[in-house]
Amino acid sequence: MKRFLALFCALFMISSFAFADDDDADIYDDIDQGEEEDDDITLRTSGNINEAGDQYIKIGLMVTCPLNFGGSFPLYKEGKLATGGAGMIGYHRFITNWWAAGINIYFGYHPTLGENIFTYIPFVVDTTFQPTFKKFEFPITLGVGAAMENYLSRTYFPGLVLRGAAGVFYRATPSWSFGVEGDCMYMPQWYSNPKYNDYGVFGSMLFTARYHF
Image 1: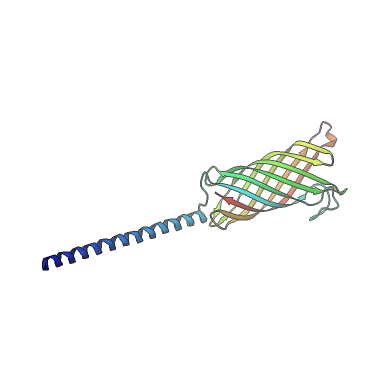
Image 2: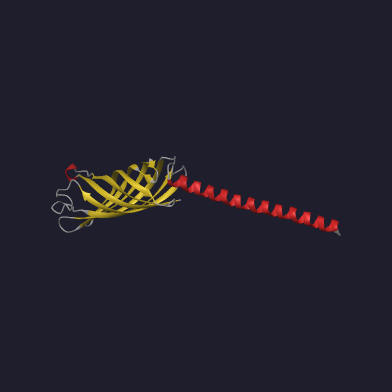
C-alpha cells in the first residue's frame, strides 16, 4: 500500500510539472506572436513603410486656380476662368519600396467670365517617387494623360494633360494615410487654325485620403 501511494504521488508530481511546462510554453508562444505582430506594425508605420506589390486607392478634393487666364489670386473672377474645384480617384501599385505607378481620374470645373461652366475629365497615368521619414511620406509625382474638355456645346477630346505634384502624408494606421498635395496641370488645346489654340495652366491644392492594402 505504501509503495502504491508513493508511486501515485510521484506520478502526480511528474504530471503537474509537465502541464506547467506546457502552460509556460503556450504563454511564451503567445508573447512571441504578439511581439512579432507589434514588430510588423512598427515596421509598417515607421522607416520603410512600403514594399513592392503594396497598393493603395486614393481619393481627394481639390481647389483649382487658373493661372494664365487673367484675374488675380485667389478667386480670379476678373479673368476668363474663375477658381474652381475638382474631385479625383486613383489606383497605384508600388513597383519597389520607393516607386509606384498608377492612374488617376479627375472631374473638374471652372466658372467662366460669362457665368457659364467649363468642365474637364482628365485621365492621367503617373509615376511616383515616395521617400519616407517615420510615419511621414513625401510623394513626388509626374504624369501624362488625356482629357475630355467641354464648354457650352463644344467638346474637345482628346486633350493632352501633363501633371506634376508634390505632397506630404501622415500614415495614421497601416491601412490609412492622409495628406495634402500641390500640383500643376498643363492642358493645351490645338486646332487646325493656330489662332484658336489655347494653353491652360492650372495650380491646385489637393486634400487626400489613401487606403493601403
